[in-house]
Length: 485
Ligand SMILES: [Fe+2]
Image 1 (tube, rainbow, N blue to C red):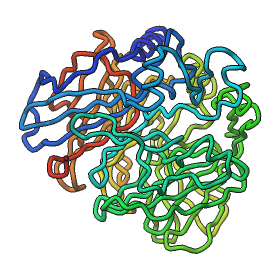
Image 2: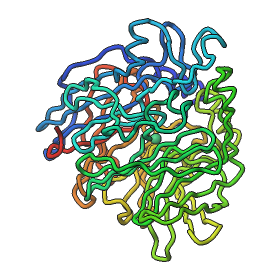
Image 3: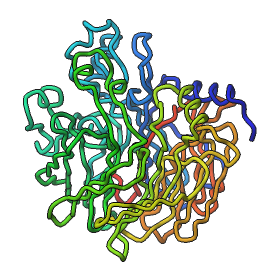
């Protein structure tokens, strides 16, 4: 479908307007036929509010976390949505104005309002997981928020029996009493073990590794000191390795601390310099730092596994340059000028060498990759995601995509002027029938639907109609009935 730049920008702006109503177990209208075996709950997180007291947040990543809950119950679907009631959210709700700085947002009032304000708002807006009976809303700069899986009531910050308590220097403890827990844990679908990380910035910067067993017990976190500051959104976990791709980044700590600039504006990534790969053996032993020779930036790692020759194979979504994510218009312009679309690529790393190989999986833009849950390091499965249609060189992700790793086959379905979110697979195992659940923003109606898609050909099996608009968001999870609370 041919769309003008103005049409695309208008659609994106209209999609990013605040959620105004919270619904309670509203039965939704369904078109088509829901798969009879599809019983369980879909949770999905994303920013739902973009301003406070008439002042717009400075960055899309600062929107307040808003959870959607869809309960699939023998052919019926019930909907509930709630903002995550973080401490900051509640205080700002009471005050009717912005009280916290965010990742890309300065408080109104200039320097006096931001000077030495070191505690940033935990937006709780990036992802949501169910693990060991805990439903957790995640944000990579802080601790998880635990929610009631039925009512979505916010129960408070989860510190894993004190294991997330920050025991570093006083400045670090003051700015962040609990350690950060990233929004992309790897969960082994067979053993139930969860592996995650947090990045603590400072001098030195540290990467903290967390292991949580199937019963929810966190082991003492492992601390890995970094040679320099970096910025990591997701790590790869295989049977043998934990791998973090480290871009060269510079962070103007004094200016951010003094309140002169937001953290986003203080962050500079040198994406022309090749990334390094930090490889940490899972069974202990010293870590290694590998020169990949690959420039750019990676938010998301779709799949990772060990190869027979002793290497690692990662399917990553790589940006040739770091995108201007705070401003949609600027993002469009920069991508158009530099062909900076994120693409799905296979990165092979040799732990004993200093060069990696990179193969492009598709020419189209690709983001929010997902796969059916499996064992960590398991053989490869199809990768789903949102995509740009082949004829478009702008970051307007109106298509859904499926990439078959074994054959290289790419299936795409363009939704025209409508915008899908992350497609979330539902099958409990890799070999049973799979469905994808994806929210889609209907631009003509300025409303959202939830699509139930055939995971093989991306055709629509059923459409679930929402009464309102859900802004474009990030990540979610499917909890089958057998493991739902
Ligand atoms: Fe993410």
